[in-house]
Image (tube, rainbow over all chains, first blue to last red; front, top):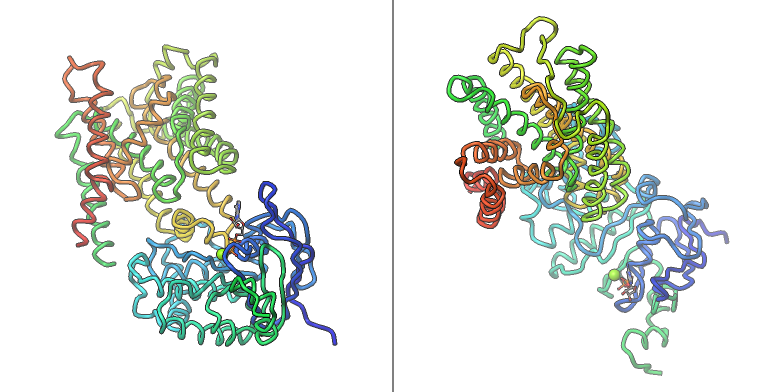
Length: 251
Length: 309
Ligand SMILES: Nc1ncnc2c1ncn2[C@@H]1O[C@H](COP(=O)(O)OP(=O)(O)O)[C@@H](O)[C@H]1O
Ligand SMILES: [Mg+2]
């Protein structure tokens, strides 16, 4: 059986002044799946995201996207290719309105972002689409609010809406539910399932129930290296994984 | 949102009224100086207030505009509006180079690179044959605007300067409220996020820097025509500090703040009694510390916060 891979890494390694944060990671992410990346704190999950989106340059290794080597590209190029990330700490534009947050993502494709002589009213043509995206995450009624005033869980939802605005082929979500209340977790889980319908998602998540529910494939990272990979059932019964997570082996 | 738009319209109307009647109430030369510095501070605010880049070398662009316009009007017989156009383009060109070099670093390193580069410009003016060295470039003619309006008439000169200010101010206002301005604000708010949305933030920063420098050049060129003099003090790092002070006092990232800040600083400099001479920097410094501690958002920023509540 040939697999349809959207993203593949080979020997991906990142050293920080001699400290190896990501060690020889080979990941194969199949198109159209939800792939979860889990592991204890400090395992190198965020660093892996930074490598994939080129916020860090890898020390060694290659990254292939749709079979093309993207290892030396710049972060903004990666985004324009269709790999769009979110951040572990909520990444919104706090002093823009909620609507403007989403619109800034939609704006790029209009190709007028360098036009300093035009009124921003030309962007109003995007308001309809922006409202659709906001409604999808239940933020429609906050559209004109300054984003800084949103509660934390809502900011994370806004971040997902902004990411979706780019209609990315692949979405990288770094702990999208960190710091969320119980109902929010349920809502965002449903949202991720919905938006995964026609794209690939790689997500870091600490809520194991969410990982179990959403993850088609799970990669477990520990001390920078891949410890195990497989379905949730396979991974969760792996004694090495149990040891890394709980600190004791029950074998 | 409507309240805000109406507030802005009201502000622009007020600015127009003040600008039109001011020469009847105060010395036109004083007001011309205010408009030049107000434009300089607004240009600086475009960079610091709306893009989040702290330049500590903006005196360079003021002086590039000033010396080039002065030389062109004096030696090459440029009309004043062409002199200002040249000063604007030259400021922008130097700004493009500075910006391109400086944006590779961020924060304090960015500020230090702009400072170092502006010190180089200072040295150029000190050495160049046409600048008059320590004496400055003197005897710049005001000439006839568009070959018609004799600017040796003080009122003609005043309204010419005010028109230049308003044109620059409105261009900055438009830039802030343009698709480009939206991207600038997003860079200021969260640069990594702007990158992750696919924006090449460096290119946006360079354009913002160039625009800011060009309009600083406009301010410098206009100032040279007003005083018929371009001098080394325009290029000194004191001047780079002063524009930071004006902007912060008036209100960083507000449309009208830099205008208010410039008015305040120039008034204080003019009104402090003659006796205090050497103490001016100390007095200005104290006022600055008190204001920035007490009203963190600057005068206009605090007023806006008051009205929004
Ligand atoms: N920029 C950096 N410089 C030095 N060390 C870093 C840097 N970023 C991450 N690290 C280190 O790399 C390791 C992995 O971090 P991270 O990828 O954030 O882990 P995770 O997201 O899995 O919790 C940690 O030990 C962290 O201290
Ligand atoms: Mg992390």
